[in-house]
Length: 244
Image (cartoon, rainbow, N blue to C red):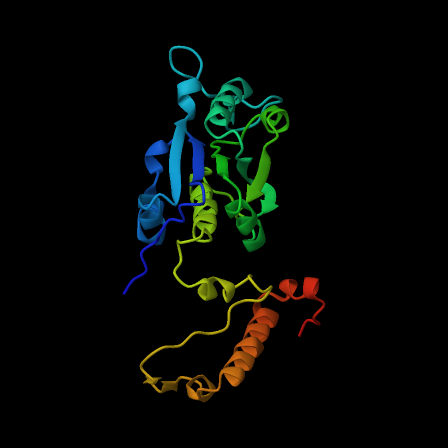
């Protein structure tokens, strides 16, 4: 039977609050599968704030040309400041995060730290970015989901939220399935197999069918180290292992 997320009544609901020009993008993929079921179960909640509600003048202007010249537009400090202040009244204890390509890389460890807190308040930028004064004045932590640029921060916000939500108690059925994933042990995950035993001439490794749990565990560890050395040798250096 598929796992149905169950809320721990002793734990407060984890809250994601997103400031965006496109609230209609949410919940998007966060409304389906385990994340959506966990939201329905009250394990976490999702709310959005329309940045344009804090825009200036008749047309609710939110951006202007870059100081010093250049292409594109920049989100204004005197718009984002009040919007972030409003968000703070709704989630006073959640960290303020700006999704930015120049930010700290999102890692499994960082996702776990955020999942253990009360939630997150996320600023999804657009255009050329946001006025730097907002970041310093409001104490925004910049986080990046990778070394590439998107049209806006909404998809990055969804990635961060899902990375956190799946770590909340009650969302994933077996804790062991989380413990053995890529990055949890500093290694990439070992290969996985299931029925049929043989498929287009390829067979499941005999050791996985041996019933010897120690041998299975040793094989999985060796394969995890091999894959990590081949594909992400940078992950081995912090653990004192030689690159292969």
